[in-house]
Image (cartoon, rainbow, N blue to C red; front, side, top):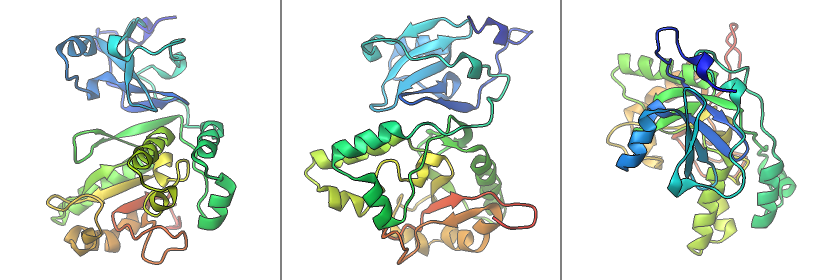
Length: 280
């Protein structure tokens, strides 16, 4: 099977605006990415999708509009190629509603870290969060990286950002969706630097328990203010969020003295669907 039927009648291919998510690999629209090496840029210019391994962020290869797969030599992985989700790769048609991916893999990783998932959930009141099978592009974050959120959160974020702008307030995204593998990487790097698991858990949710996994949460900042610092609460942007974010379905997840024992995070906001009657 190829992607040839997906080519537009006039020879143009629509730009896909979603990330396709699998247990170990994520598929990203090539038009959103830039390569550092000339050889990779040449390949990228012909690509429709790029496959990226989640646990180390390494690009494995690209898929062109005709369904031809090209390995990236420096990213080639041992064993079989990623399972290509053909039915979801049509850039002219949104995938079916996002479904939750399995939590089995993250439970195994938590055990290796020496963290009992059930005990941690009981102590913090946090629930395990599954990754969705796809996420929507919500623009770029502060660092010009593609920002991925759930469909509802993406629309709400763009509306809220525009409304703030009308009031003279600039909001920028520090980060949005993060995979289980990304969160695991944070823990592994900190453990390698000699930090204890207990110390890391004081400032980072355990892998599998972060709201960022859902695509509903994002860290918000404003130009001139350091990212993810409590001093954000002193800005006009934070004051605006306190007054208006609820209108768009966003709520601050970790205020001071929150019941989860998470440090105060005035920058972390999570979206919950808002219904016509104003309830969440």
